[in-house]
Image 1 (cartoon, rainbow, N blue to C red):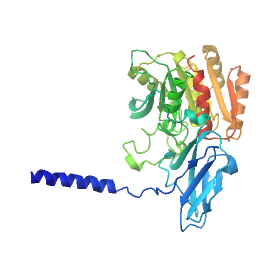
Image 2 (image 1 turned 90 degrees about the horizontal axis):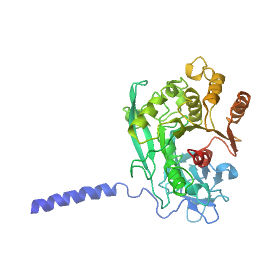
Image 3 (image 1 turned 60 degrees about the vertical axis):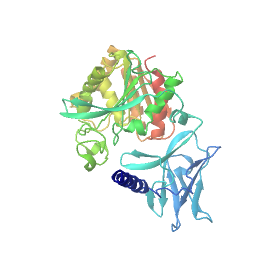
Image 4 (image 1 turned 120 degrees about the horizontal axis):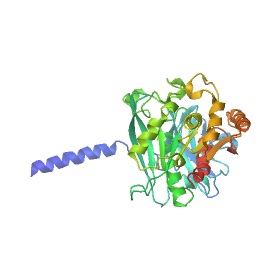
Length: 388
Protein backbone atom coordinates (compact mmCIF):
# COMPACT_ATOMS: atom_id res chain seq x y z
CA UNK A 1 0.00 0.00 0.00
CA UNK A 2 2.79 2.40 0.91
CA UNK A 3 4.53 1.51 -2.37
CA UNK A 4 1.39 2.41 -4.33
CA UNK A 5 1.05 5.70 -2.48
CA UNK A 6 4.71 6.52 -3.16
CA UNK A 7 4.31 5.80 -6.89
CA UNK A 8 1.17 7.95 -6.99
CA UNK A 9 3.08 10.76 -5.27
CA UNK A 10 5.87 10.53 -7.85
CA UNK A 11 3.37 10.65 -10.73
CA UNK A 12 1.66 13.69 -9.27
CA UNK A 13 5.06 15.34 -8.78
CA UNK A 14 5.97 14.76 -12.44
CA UNK A 15 2.64 16.17 -13.62
CA UNK A 16 3.11 19.16 -11.32
CA UNK A 17 6.60 19.86 -12.70
CA UNK A 18 5.31 19.58 -16.28
CA UNK A 19 2.41 21.92 -15.49
CA UNK A 20 4.82 24.43 -13.92
CA UNK A 21 6.97 24.53 -17.06
CA UNK A 22 4.86 27.11 -18.93
CA UNK A 23 3.78 29.30 -16.02
CA UNK A 24 4.34 32.97 -16.87
CA UNK A 25 4.27 32.55 -20.64
CA UNK A 26 1.70 35.39 -20.80
CA UNK A 27 1.15 38.57 -18.87
CA UNK A 28 -2.45 38.00 -17.82
CA UNK A 29 -2.98 41.61 -16.77
CA UNK A 30 -2.53 42.88 -20.37
CA UNK A 31 -5.26 42.24 -22.94
CA UNK A 32 -4.06 42.49 -26.53
CA UNK A 33 -5.41 42.86 -29.10
CA UNK A 34 -8.82 44.22 -28.18
CA UNK A 35 -11.24 44.41 -31.14
CA UNK A 36 -13.56 47.30 -30.33
CA UNK A 37 -17.25 47.53 -31.20
CA UNK A 38 -16.63 50.09 -33.95
CA UNK A 39 -14.06 47.86 -35.72
CA UNK A 40 -11.00 49.66 -34.41
CA UNK A 41 -8.39 47.56 -32.61
CA UNK A 42 -6.34 48.40 -29.51
CA UNK A 43 -2.92 46.84 -28.97
CA UNK A 44 -1.15 46.78 -25.61
CA UNK A 45 2.35 45.72 -24.60
CA UNK A 46 4.19 45.88 -21.30
CA UNK A 47 7.78 46.84 -22.09
CA UNK A 48 9.08 48.83 -19.13
CA UNK A 49 12.60 49.48 -20.41
CA UNK A 50 11.73 50.15 -24.08
CA UNK A 51 12.30 53.58 -25.56
CA UNK A 52 10.03 53.13 -28.61
CA UNK A 53 7.33 50.60 -29.50
CA UNK A 54 5.26 50.27 -32.69
CA UNK A 55 2.79 47.78 -34.10
CA UNK A 56 3.23 46.64 -37.72
CA UNK A 57 0.26 45.00 -39.43
CA UNK A 58 -1.19 44.18 -42.84
CA UNK A 59 -4.06 46.69 -42.79
CA UNK A 60 -4.21 49.69 -45.13
CA UNK A 61 -4.79 52.52 -42.64
CA UNK A 62 -1.63 54.49 -41.77
CA UNK A 63 0.40 52.07 -43.89
CA UNK A 64 -0.21 49.32 -41.37
CA UNK A 65 2.04 50.93 -38.76
CA UNK A 66 1.07 52.54 -35.47
CA UNK A 67 3.31 54.28 -32.95
CA UNK A 68 2.43 53.10 -29.44
CA UNK A 69 2.33 55.45 -26.45
CA UNK A 70 3.45 54.48 -22.95
CA UNK A 71 0.89 54.99 -20.22
CA UNK A 72 1.39 55.71 -16.55
CA UNK A 73 0.95 52.00 -15.81
CA UNK A 74 3.99 51.16 -17.96
CA UNK A 75 1.88 49.64 -20.76
CA UNK A 76 2.34 50.83 -24.36
CA UNK A 77 -0.92 51.23 -26.34
CA UNK A 78 -2.14 52.08 -29.82
CA UNK A 79 -5.62 52.06 -31.36
CA UNK A 80 -6.09 51.71 -35.11
CA UNK A 81 -8.65 53.55 -37.21
CA UNK A 82 -11.77 51.51 -38.00
CA UNK A 83 -10.70 48.44 -40.02
CA UNK A 84 -12.73 46.54 -42.62
CA UNK A 85 -13.78 43.02 -41.70
CA UNK A 86 -10.83 40.68 -42.30
CA UNK A 87 -8.26 38.45 -40.64
CA UNK A 88 -5.15 40.52 -39.92
CA UNK A 89 -1.58 39.70 -39.04
CA UNK A 90 0.75 41.90 -37.00
CA UNK A 91 3.95 42.06 -34.94
CA UNK A 92 5.52 44.48 -32.48
CA UNK A 93 8.64 46.56 -33.12
CA UNK A 94 10.34 47.15 -29.77
CA UNK A 95 13.46 49.32 -30.18
CA UNK A 96 14.01 47.76 -33.61
CA UNK A 97 13.44 44.17 -32.49
CA UNK A 98 10.46 42.58 -34.26
CA UNK A 99 8.42 40.02 -32.31
CA UNK A 100 5.04 38.51 -31.54
CA UNK A 101 2.42 39.85 -29.17
CA UNK A 102 3.12 37.97 -25.88
CA UNK A 103 -0.51 38.43 -24.76
CA UNK A 104 -1.90 36.79 -27.90
CA UNK A 105 -1.46 33.00 -28.22
CA UNK A 106 -2.86 32.89 -31.78
CA UNK A 107 -0.17 32.89 -34.48
CA UNK A 108 0.34 31.86 -38.11
CA UNK A 109 3.50 31.02 -40.07
CA UNK A 110 3.97 32.64 -43.48
CA UNK A 111 7.07 31.14 -45.18
CA UNK A 112 9.62 31.48 -42.34
CA UNK A 113 8.05 34.24 -40.25
CA UNK A 114 5.50 34.01 -37.43
CA UNK A 115 2.74 36.59 -37.04
CA UNK A 116 0.13 37.25 -34.37
CA UNK A 117 -3.43 37.34 -35.74
CA UNK A 118 -6.89 38.73 -35.00
CA UNK A 119 -10.27 39.05 -36.73
CA UNK A 120 -12.53 42.00 -37.29
CA UNK A 121 -16.01 40.46 -37.74
CA UNK A 122 -19.00 41.77 -39.65
CA UNK A 123 -17.99 40.87 -43.22
CA UNK A 124 -15.57 38.55 -44.98
CA UNK A 125 -13.90 37.56 -41.69
CA UNK A 126 -17.16 35.88 -40.68
CA UNK A 127 -16.30 33.18 -43.24
CA UNK A 128 -12.83 32.72 -41.69
CA UNK A 129 -14.09 32.23 -38.14
CA UNK A 130 -15.53 29.10 -36.55
CA UNK A 131 -19.33 29.02 -36.28
CA UNK A 132 -21.80 26.50 -34.92
CA UNK A 133 -22.17 24.67 -38.25
CA UNK A 134 -21.27 21.13 -39.37
CA UNK A 135 -17.50 20.83 -39.73
CA UNK A 136 -15.51 18.94 -42.31
CA UNK A 137 -12.24 17.13 -41.66
CA UNK A 138 -8.74 18.14 -42.73
CA UNK A 139 -6.41 15.18 -43.05
CA UNK A 140 -2.72 14.93 -43.90
CA UNK A 141 -2.17 12.03 -46.26
CA UNK A 142 0.77 10.77 -48.31
CA UNK A 143 0.96 9.65 -51.93
CA UNK A 144 3.86 8.16 -53.84
CA UNK A 145 5.22 10.12 -56.78
CA UNK A 146 6.95 7.94 -59.34
CA UNK A 147 8.30 11.08 -61.01
CA UNK A 148 9.87 12.48 -57.84
CA UNK A 149 10.69 8.97 -56.52
CA UNK A 150 9.38 10.04 -53.12
CA UNK A 151 6.39 9.89 -50.82
CA UNK A 152 4.82 13.35 -50.73
CA UNK A 153 2.23 14.86 -48.41
CA UNK A 154 -1.16 16.41 -49.18
CA UNK A 155 -3.70 18.24 -47.02
CA UNK A 156 -7.25 17.16 -47.87
CA UNK A 157 -10.49 18.83 -46.77
CA UNK A 158 -13.47 16.47 -46.64
CA UNK A 159 -16.90 18.14 -46.41
CA UNK A 160 -19.05 17.54 -43.30
CA UNK A 161 -21.32 15.01 -45.05
CA UNK A 162 -18.46 12.94 -46.44
CA UNK A 163 -18.58 9.37 -45.12
CA UNK A 164 -22.27 9.52 -44.22
CA UNK A 165 -23.21 7.45 -47.23
CA UNK A 166 -21.77 6.43 -50.57
CA UNK A 167 -22.18 9.77 -52.32
CA UNK A 168 -19.14 10.86 -54.38
CA UNK A 169 -17.96 14.48 -54.47
CA UNK A 170 -16.32 16.91 -56.90
CA UNK A 171 -12.74 17.98 -56.20
CA UNK A 172 -10.98 21.35 -56.10
CA UNK A 173 -7.19 21.14 -56.30
CA UNK A 174 -5.93 24.26 -54.51
CA UNK A 175 -2.28 25.27 -54.93
CA UNK A 176 -0.07 27.49 -52.75
CA UNK A 177 2.45 30.18 -53.67
CA UNK A 178 6.22 30.36 -53.48
CA UNK A 179 7.39 29.70 -49.93
CA UNK A 180 4.15 27.94 -49.06
CA UNK A 181 3.44 24.24 -48.63
CA UNK A 182 0.51 21.90 -48.07
CA UNK A 183 -0.32 23.73 -44.81
CA UNK A 184 -0.50 27.25 -46.27
CA UNK A 185 -4.09 27.25 -47.52
CA UNK A 186 -5.27 25.55 -44.32
CA UNK A 187 -3.53 27.92 -41.91
CA UNK A 188 -3.38 31.26 -43.74
CA UNK A 189 -6.16 30.63 -46.24
CA UNK A 190 -8.62 29.26 -43.63
CA UNK A 191 -9.91 26.83 -46.24
CA UNK A 192 -11.69 24.51 -43.83
CA UNK A 193 -13.58 27.37 -42.20
CA UNK A 194 -14.41 28.97 -45.55
CA UNK A 195 -15.73 25.69 -46.92
CA UNK A 196 -17.68 24.84 -43.74
CA UNK A 197 -19.37 28.23 -43.75
CA UNK A 198 -20.06 28.40 -47.50
CA UNK A 199 -21.55 24.90 -47.47
CA UNK A 200 -23.62 25.59 -44.34
CA UNK A 201 -25.05 28.76 -45.93
CA UNK A 202 -25.87 26.91 -49.16
CA UNK A 203 -23.48 29.17 -51.07
CA UNK A 204 -21.20 26.38 -52.34
CA UNK A 205 -21.56 22.79 -53.40
CA UNK A 206 -20.04 20.27 -50.97
CA UNK A 207 -16.64 19.33 -52.38
CA UNK A 208 -13.30 17.79 -51.51
CA UNK A 209 -10.40 20.28 -51.48
CA UNK A 210 -6.92 18.88 -52.12
CA UNK A 211 -3.90 21.02 -51.19
CA UNK A 212 -0.63 19.50 -52.46
CA UNK A 213 2.93 20.57 -51.74
CA UNK A 214 4.11 22.44 -54.84
CA UNK A 215 7.80 22.37 -53.86
CA UNK A 216 8.56 19.32 -56.00
CA UNK A 217 12.00 18.72 -54.55
CA UNK A 218 10.52 18.49 -51.04
CA UNK A 219 8.24 15.86 -49.56
CA UNK A 220 6.22 18.02 -47.19
CA UNK A 221 6.11 21.16 -45.04
CA UNK A 222 9.17 22.09 -42.94
CA UNK A 223 9.48 19.79 -39.95
CA UNK A 224 7.32 17.11 -41.61
CA UNK A 225 9.98 15.48 -43.84
CA UNK A 226 12.80 13.02 -43.19
CA UNK A 227 15.04 16.09 -42.86
CA UNK A 228 13.06 17.05 -39.73
CA UNK A 229 14.17 20.45 -38.38
CA UNK A 230 17.14 20.82 -40.71
CA UNK A 231 14.76 21.89 -43.52
CA UNK A 232 13.88 25.52 -42.88
CA UNK A 233 11.14 27.39 -44.76
CA UNK A 234 12.33 29.16 -47.90
CA UNK A 235 10.99 30.63 -51.12
CA UNK A 236 10.48 28.01 -53.81
CA UNK A 237 12.66 29.84 -56.33
CA UNK A 238 15.70 28.81 -54.27
CA UNK A 239 14.80 25.11 -54.52
CA UNK A 240 15.53 22.58 -57.26
CA UNK A 241 12.75 21.98 -59.83
CA UNK A 242 11.47 25.58 -59.62
CA UNK A 243 9.73 26.19 -62.97
CA UNK A 244 11.17 22.95 -64.33
CA UNK A 245 7.69 21.80 -65.36
CA UNK A 246 8.05 18.53 -63.43
CA UNK A 247 5.36 19.30 -60.85
CA UNK A 248 2.76 20.22 -63.47
CA UNK A 249 3.68 17.29 -65.73
CA UNK A 250 3.31 14.84 -62.83
CA UNK A 251 0.12 16.34 -61.47
CA UNK A 252 -2.10 13.48 -62.64
CA UNK A 253 -0.29 11.30 -60.08
CA UNK A 254 -2.07 13.35 -57.43
CA UNK A 255 -5.42 13.22 -59.24
CA UNK A 256 -5.20 9.45 -59.70
CA UNK A 257 -4.28 8.99 -56.04
CA UNK A 258 -7.22 11.10 -54.85
CA UNK A 259 -9.65 9.31 -57.16
CA UNK A 260 -8.38 5.99 -55.84
CA UNK A 261 -8.48 6.89 -52.14
CA UNK A 262 -11.61 9.04 -51.82
CA UNK A 263 -15.14 8.93 -53.20
CA UNK A 264 -14.80 11.43 -56.02
CA UNK A 265 -16.72 12.13 -59.20
CA UNK A 266 -13.76 11.28 -61.41
CA UNK A 267 -14.45 13.31 -64.53
CA UNK A 268 -13.56 16.66 -66.08
CA UNK A 269 -16.88 18.28 -65.16
CA UNK A 270 -16.25 17.69 -61.46
CA UNK A 271 -12.63 18.83 -61.18
CA UNK A 272 -11.22 22.31 -60.66
CA UNK A 273 -7.68 23.60 -60.18
CA UNK A 274 -6.79 26.98 -58.70
CA UNK A 275 -3.87 28.63 -56.98
CA UNK A 276 -2.27 31.82 -55.76
CA UNK A 277 0.88 33.40 -57.20
CA UNK A 278 3.18 30.46 -58.08
CA UNK A 279 0.16 28.20 -57.58
CA UNK A 280 -1.70 30.25 -60.18
CA UNK A 281 1.21 29.70 -62.57
CA UNK A 282 1.02 25.97 -61.83
CA UNK A 283 -2.76 25.94 -62.25
CA UNK A 284 -2.57 27.54 -65.69
CA UNK A 285 -0.12 24.98 -67.04
CA UNK A 286 -1.91 22.05 -65.42
CA UNK A 287 -5.09 23.20 -67.16
CA UNK A 288 -3.33 23.75 -70.49
CA UNK A 289 -1.54 20.39 -70.43
CA UNK A 290 -4.56 18.41 -69.20
CA UNK A 291 -7.56 20.23 -70.70
CA UNK A 292 -9.58 17.00 -70.77
CA UNK A 293 -9.24 16.58 -66.97
CA UNK A 294 -10.44 19.94 -65.55
CA UNK A 295 -13.45 22.14 -66.34
CA UNK A 296 -12.58 25.00 -63.97
CA UNK A 297 -9.41 27.00 -63.38
CA UNK A 298 -8.75 29.90 -61.01
CA UNK A 299 -5.70 32.15 -61.16
CA UNK A 300 -5.25 34.25 -58.00
CA UNK A 301 -2.53 36.93 -58.44
CA UNK A 302 -0.83 34.45 -60.74
CA UNK A 303 2.87 34.69 -61.61
CA UNK A 304 2.32 34.34 -65.35
CA UNK A 305 4.64 34.09 -68.34
CA UNK A 306 7.75 35.29 -66.52
CA UNK A 307 11.19 33.68 -66.63
CA UNK A 308 10.01 30.42 -68.16
CA UNK A 309 11.90 28.14 -70.52
CA UNK A 310 9.52 27.56 -73.40
CA UNK A 311 11.71 24.72 -74.68
CA UNK A 312 10.35 22.65 -71.76
CA UNK A 313 7.39 20.64 -73.04
CA UNK A 314 5.17 21.72 -70.13
CA UNK A 315 5.62 25.40 -71.04
CA UNK A 316 5.87 25.18 -74.83
CA UNK A 317 3.36 26.37 -77.45
CA UNK A 318 1.04 28.27 -75.12
CA UNK A 319 -1.01 29.67 -78.00
CA UNK A 320 -1.51 26.19 -79.42
CA UNK A 321 -2.53 24.92 -75.99
CA UNK A 322 -4.95 27.81 -75.52
CA UNK A 323 -6.49 27.00 -78.90
CA UNK A 324 -6.80 23.36 -77.86
CA UNK A 325 -8.40 24.41 -74.57
CA UNK A 326 -11.02 26.29 -76.56
CA UNK A 327 -11.57 23.23 -78.73
CA UNK A 328 -11.90 20.82 -75.79
CA UNK A 329 -14.06 23.32 -73.86
CA UNK A 330 -14.28 24.36 -70.21
CA UNK A 331 -16.80 25.95 -67.86
CA UNK A 332 -14.85 28.66 -66.02
CA UNK A 333 -11.53 30.47 -66.51
CA UNK A 334 -11.37 32.86 -63.53
CA UNK A 335 -8.62 35.46 -63.00
CA UNK A 336 -8.27 37.74 -59.97
CA UNK A 337 -5.60 40.36 -59.25
CA UNK A 338 -5.19 43.39 -56.98
CA UNK A 339 -4.64 46.79 -58.55
CA UNK A 340 -1.49 47.29 -56.45
CA UNK A 341 -0.11 43.79 -57.05
CA UNK A 342 3.40 43.68 -58.54
CA UNK A 343 2.03 41.05 -60.95
CA UNK A 344 -0.80 43.29 -62.17
CA UNK A 345 0.79 44.19 -65.52
CA UNK A 346 1.72 40.61 -66.44
CA UNK A 347 -1.84 39.55 -65.68
CA UNK A 348 -3.18 42.36 -67.88
CA UNK A 349 -0.78 41.25 -70.63
CA UNK A 350 -2.06 37.70 -70.23
CA UNK A 351 -5.72 38.62 -70.64
CA UNK A 352 -4.76 40.59 -73.76
CA UNK A 353 -3.31 37.32 -75.05
CA UNK A 354 -6.50 35.48 -74.10
CA UNK A 355 -8.51 38.10 -75.98
CA UNK A 356 -6.31 37.65 -79.06
CA UNK A 357 -6.71 33.87 -78.88
CA UNK A 358 -10.47 34.08 -78.33
CA UNK A 359 -10.36 32.48 -74.89
CA UNK A 360 -13.28 33.51 -72.68
CA UNK A 361 -12.55 34.35 -69.05
CA UNK A 362 -13.93 36.05 -65.95
CA UNK A 363 -11.79 38.95 -64.71
CA UNK A 364 -11.90 40.27 -61.14
CA UNK A 365 -9.85 43.31 -60.14
CA UNK A 366 -9.64 44.07 -56.43
CA UNK A 367 -7.85 46.67 -54.32
CA UNK A 368 -4.50 46.17 -52.59
CA UNK A 369 -1.63 43.91 -53.57
CA UNK A 370 -0.08 40.47 -53.25
CA UNK A 371 -1.63 39.49 -49.94
CA UNK A 372 -3.60 36.73 -48.26
CA UNK A 373 -6.51 39.09 -47.62
CA UNK A 374 -7.12 39.12 -51.38
CA UNK A 375 -6.64 35.38 -51.88
CA UNK A 376 -9.10 34.47 -49.14
CA UNK A 377 -11.65 36.81 -50.67
CA UNK A 378 -11.02 35.33 -54.13
CA UNK A 379 -11.96 31.97 -52.62
CA UNK A 380 -15.27 33.46 -51.50
CA UNK A 381 -15.90 34.56 -55.10
CA UNK A 382 -14.52 31.53 -56.95
CA UNK A 383 -15.77 28.53 -54.95
CA UNK A 384 -19.51 29.36 -55.23
CA UNK A 385 -19.15 29.22 -59.05
CA UNK A 386 -17.90 25.61 -59.03
CA UNK A 387 -19.86 22.48 -59.95
CA UNK A 388 -23.22 24.26 -60.24
